[in-house]
Every structure is written in C-alpha cells, then in structure tokens.
Length: 326
Image 1 (tube, one colour):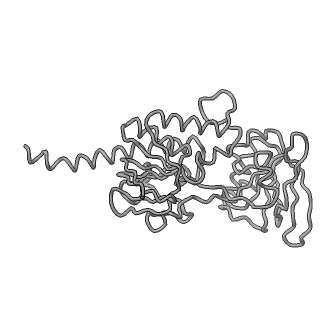
Image 2: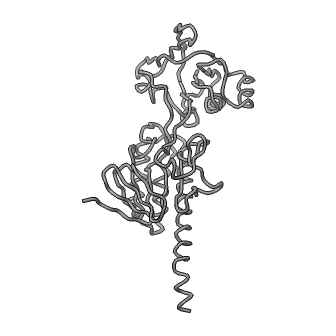
Image 3: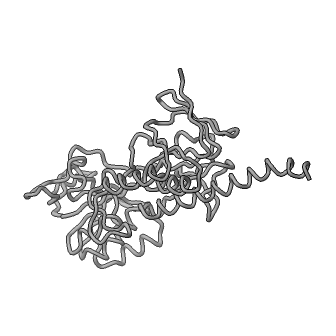
C-alpha cells in the first residue's frame, strides 16, 4: 500500500539551504518534511575542513556541521525522509511529489534546495586526490594554500575568477586550458592577462594528479599537450578544477522556468519561482556565490517567503466566510 505524507511545506534537499529552511519553517509551526535526496547533507558531507562558516573559532568538519544542522531541524519539529523524488505535479495545490520508494508527498508549499554539483575532469586519480590538494572551490579552500604554488583548470568565467581570487593567497598561479583561447568574458580575460602572478598554459589538459609525501598530498600535475600528445610534469601544491557546475534541476524541466545554464529562475530579491507556492534556495538557484553560508541565508528567505505565501492564501480562503458572517 502506497504511503502518503502531507505537510504545509515539503523541502527537497538536506544541505545548508534545505535544513535552514526546515529550522525556520518548523519554528513557525509548519511541520515541514525534508526529503533528503541522493546525497543527504549535500556537498558539505564530502568536505573535510570548513573554516569559513561563521560561529566557529576553530576549523570544523563538513559532515559534523551538517549533522548538527539536521539535529537542530529535527529538534524543532522537522520530519526527515530518506527518499529521492522522481515525479512532480506542480499544476495544483497541494503539490504532489512521488519518491523512488513509491511514497507520495503532498505539500501546500514546496521548497527546492537540491543544490548543484561541481563538474569534475573524471580522470582516474581525481577521486583519490580530492581533499588532498585537489578542490573544486577556490573560495572555499584557497586559504589553505597561502604562499603555495597552485593551478586552476578551465577556461570560462569560473576558472578566470578562481585564478584571480587565488592571487590573494598565492604568488604563483597557473591557469591550464585545453584550447588556445578562453571562453570567459573579455573584461575578466583582461584582468587575468594583466596580473603579474598568473601564467596561462594553453592547449594542455590534466592527464593525472600526482600524489606524494606522508601524509599523501598533491605534488604535481601531469599535463598532456592537446596538439602533440606530449606529457609534461608541473610541480604544484594545489589544483582547482573550475569547469562549471550542474544544478540538480532536471526533475523540474517543463514545470518551472530555468535559465540558460539550467538554474531555477527566482524573482529578484526573493526565492519565488515561476509557480506560486514553489520556492528555490541554495546552489540550485545561485550560480554566483555557492557558499554554505549564502545557501543557509537563502534557505531562511525561502521559509519566510513560504510562510508569507501561506498566510496570504489562508486569509483569502477565510475572508469570504468572515464577510458573510458580518
């Protein structure tokens, strides 16, 4: 028999955005249900040292932070469900969602916090070296490479911005691009080419990340010339893969407005999507900042936007009856 769960708010995703939305919604008495998705806790569960989340004097661990957020959400009244949504019907309220488990979720409002995944190179040594010198976020991890030689891999806006950012920490930044020209905006390219601490290596792709030392860390990258196939080794202590992100929005294609990069469109200054009662927060709608703290901030906004929506909807429902009684 198919189980059905109903709530005033269904939240998809259990990273900082989703759990913050849950905390605010639960404290407002909305009894939210969080459907955790395929990666409970979001990207922070695969992040070790976190040094830029406010409130902690010492470095904390990403999985621990998400564990604490979940406990807080549950403590104030959030119900957690281990499921992955595979079907949605947003044509009428309550919204209807169906999980892989067969469970049906009905929500008067829906908060989408499904996040975005960094794109990786998918070379054999990459997975092994993540967190050991290989990262996909210079803003998150750049501080740990202060004074060290680093490389940034990519040729779009993300890569150029990360290379420029890393000059705050490193005196020697090398941008590695597999073509002979960049795709980044011209103004960013001009800043990059003018910077004395950035070197560009054209027509190169990473063949492997080279580990070494005890404990094991990144010591070099092997680069393949895309024209000749020749391999050369470049010593480095940090590598940032900056080839873009993929937002988890495929489920909503055809149901909600997406931008050209696949991110959910929201009204400026709000978390409201193209369907009234559906809200988006975190990396699924933010392609610029992509930080845990900004995700949490938009999670708060989504809960407050949803609470306001429900209050107005309830008022509209009860107003005619109140007028008749008068």
